[in-house]
Length: 485
Image 1 (spheres, rainbow, N blue to C red):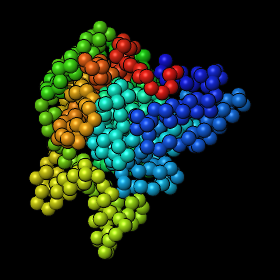
Image 2 (cartoon, helix red, strand yellow):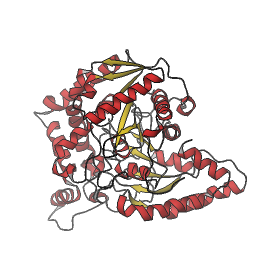
Image 3 (cartoon, rainbow, N blue to C red):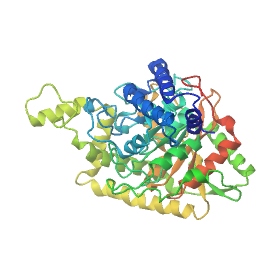
Image 4 (spheres, rainbow, N blue to C red):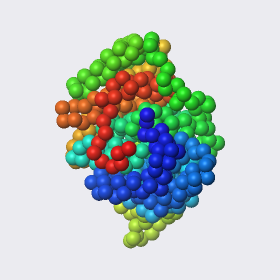
């Protein structure tokens, strides 16, 4: 039984009240967050008010939904009406949205209990969570290591048992990579399955919201709740009424699971060994392992950084100090004010990506970089379509390494860019991908396995991931932190 179902049973059986449960999580946050730094804002008053409303329903004998009364958290780039939303950037200090993101509007309508907003790399740009203006989130398995990025705060909170689940965003691996580092489950849905309305944009053609949870079952429950069409997001079509939770126990005997040789190139030996060991588990369940070539993968990382930075340059042009957020204290005119505000308000990594994006979009370089990257993107999409003619699901490492020690991303940013090498192809092609724990290195740090599916086929990859979790539960660990249910 997953955490969400367990909490639901606790509430409906009156083993504890929703108020008691919520207060337990708030107390755990107060105790652990000083070291984990997972939360940048705790919304205790709002959480307890929702919990009281759920308790009132239960006392009146009314049925409650599966997510009703279950505490959760949101990455700090999702708009929450009246609650500060900063993207962990100085430039959005004090910004309180006047509307809710669709995903939060949906969950709030189901009486989800918001514990707070969680840490992230500034504007979702990073792979360690250390680019946050609040300092980075720590890995709950070993706090000397990073939680990963950019949704590091959500992964740290869930892995540290100070939130049963949370929503992150994934532009090039920002859900799956921290999930892998922290030993939890992270689902990046198909582009267009979940509304992006109210998600503060990094790269609009790549961004996607998804859940980070303790189990595949929980990821399926949350995904089903948020995967609906939204007219406010013209790219969102929802999940066509498919309920992935009902398909979690389908037999995978005869399923073809593909492994591209290129996904194993340059991967650390302990990670490669864990992936191949997971393949043996699938064989024991009756699945067939199919090896194939996917040479186009070598272009995925440069294509991603060109497109993502170009879109970031455009999206982040709106932050000028005039309408909301941080504003420079001293300036000589409007132009100087905007320059100073952006120079002082953005961190180094954000400025680096804005400059790169502006460069590739500039006259004389547009055709050489951006247009070529878009053409290659189409080739990558076609290559994945062809690959799925040979297999039902593609299996790969989530990250070619385990969580690195704090400070390494700052001292060697180029190396940390390479942590995205296994995750960015999924975003470029708009495909769904789920990361699940599949082992540990010699120091006990988690290793993540990624399952990639066809567009809008979350049901297949979640079922395959669920079958693995049932067959190898020892690969999923619990940390010493937080609430122990």
